[in-house]
Structure formats: structure tokens, C-alpha cells
Length: 268
DNA sequence: ATGACTCATCCAATGAGA
Image (cartoon, rainbow, N blue to C red; front, side):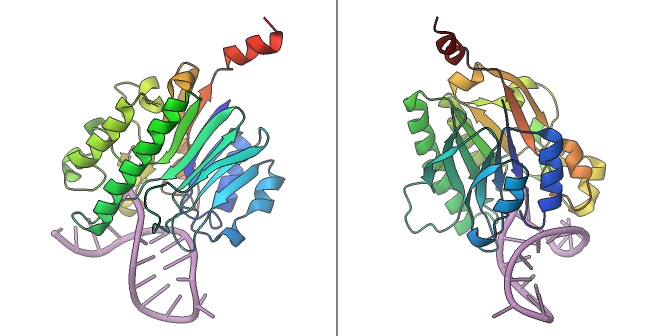
């Protein structure tokens, strides 16, 4: 089973690129971020024609997350993170699909720092960590997939010294990410590629793609049950080179079949 | 240090992204 995350930076403007990538990559489940679309303009028909059922949590102009599945039904389990009822930003959607709990998330950027946007990022991080702990405690197979807006280490940025004051890289944020992992999550891309420079985002500015001046900020975190099934994790960086593309590239994991489930099917 | 680029917004100039 292949599960992907892709910050599309505008789901309607990006539709041709998204459909092309879906046709080529054939992921079973996809988490999308930055829909930048109100719910009524989400391209559900075009995605349905491409073979995907969808669940979406949109918002006019900004944010917005969605979960696509071609594997079967999607059952919503949570829309928005608890803990801040006045928060109207559409950044979290969670569902059960194909035997897995999938959380699609778009963590706040947090710049400029210091300021209210940075404070909001830290609060949102805490709310995510609370939910993540609940999900781990459930013992279910869970994947947290999305744009975390966190550069975890020096290895994940083309020029660390340029980013020391940035809300994506300051120690406070990197520590929050490390604490999240310490709950028991596996950073799938890093697990499969230790010691490798690997990016998921390249700025539109300054020919960042041409210079390979990237950041690794889109992450796929696996609960222990799914970490055992991890087979491959990659970035479809070629998509970043397409016309009218997003500044992010899709990231995906391939999971081995669930041995427990297979045993039960065989009845042994 | 700034701004470069791209998206979405009642179409123009602005906010947001990272």
C-alpha cells in the first residue's frame, strides 16, 4: 500500500499537475495540504473520475487539507484539532481508510517570529502532540502525514546558517518535533535514507529548484504497527520540475501487507 | 538586509507562503 502527502499550493490551480501525478504514481491514499479552496469548489468530480474518493476540509483563500483514497471508503474520525474552539483555520483532517488511520495535517508556518503567528504554531504543535499521543495509545496503525513546516536537523536544509532565526528551524520548533517523535513515531523518509540530503520543498524564488536549495519539511510519521511494515519512502522530486508545479513535491511510503490481517484471512 | 515568485482574492494590489 502506497500512502503519500502533497502540499499542492492551490488544489484548483494545481489540478492538471495533481491528476498527472496521481495517474503516474498511483498512490492508494493521498493527503493534500494548502487546498486554498472553499469546500464548494473542491474538485471532487475530477478526482472521482481519476478513481479517488475524497474527504476535504477547505477554507477560502488559505490552508485546507484533504484525504484521497482509491482503496475504498473513507471514514472521517476527526475534523480540526481539539483544544482551541476559536481556531477557524482548516489544518487537520483524520480518517480511517484501507485499514489505517490517516491524519492529514498542515502545521502553521509561524513566521514572523516572535509574534502571534509563532505563538499559534507552538500552540498548534501542542494540540497535535496531544492527539498524536491518543492515537498511539489506541494501538491502531496510524500515519501522520503532511506539511509540518519543521526542518528537523541541519541535514534537512541546503544552508542551515541562513535559517537559524526562522520559525521552521529555531530550536523551540525542532525540539517540539523531536518530542513528537519521542512519543514513538518513525520519520519514514529519514528512517529509509539515513545520512542522505533529501528535500521536499524548493522555493519559487532565486531559482531554488535549479540550485537544489531545498528544505525537508513534509513528513510521514508512522506508528509502531506501521513502522514494522515500512518498505520504501521516497520524494517524487521530478514533479517539482513540471510546468505550473507546486513549490512542494509529493512524498510517499510503501507499506508491506499487514501480516496479522493475512493470517486471519487464511484462518491460521 | 531585501526581494526575488506564485497563489487566491468580486480584476488590483495585497496578504500569505517558507
